[in-house]
Length: 166
Image (tube, rainbow, N blue to C red):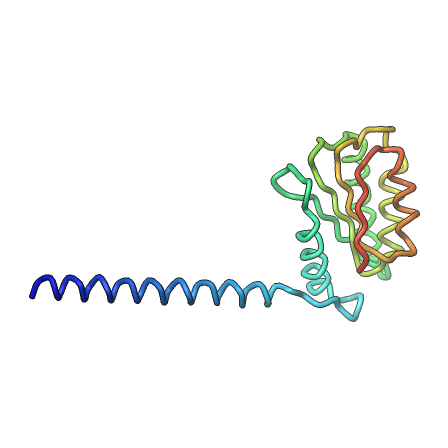
């Protein structure tokens, strides 16, 4: 009788364990589907843009050796507040570029306006020392029309340039 009860307990435990594993796998799949944020339809949806651009950055981390990327969301600059925010952020990035970035890091730039983002990157790197970004990945998320302008601005720095079309 004891053996029968012991076998029943073991069998029941195995069933519960298998059910939990199956549920965990289903939860993982559901979570992956939820994380696909659509491209926002308006430039003012900052929460939507952060989610959308964040997933593009996450999908392009290959080759990065640092624990986390440095991501910069550039606003369209249509209001005085956005212009002031972009100016402060530009100053911070220019200071970072002047100091230099350790190899293995990834800097990502994106925003609702590809043109504004491209101009931001060009301005940020205009005084960079030649070769100072060797083995640093710079990711530009924008329109194909702005890709070459950004690539040309980064070329002297020696950065590894990556482009993702939004």
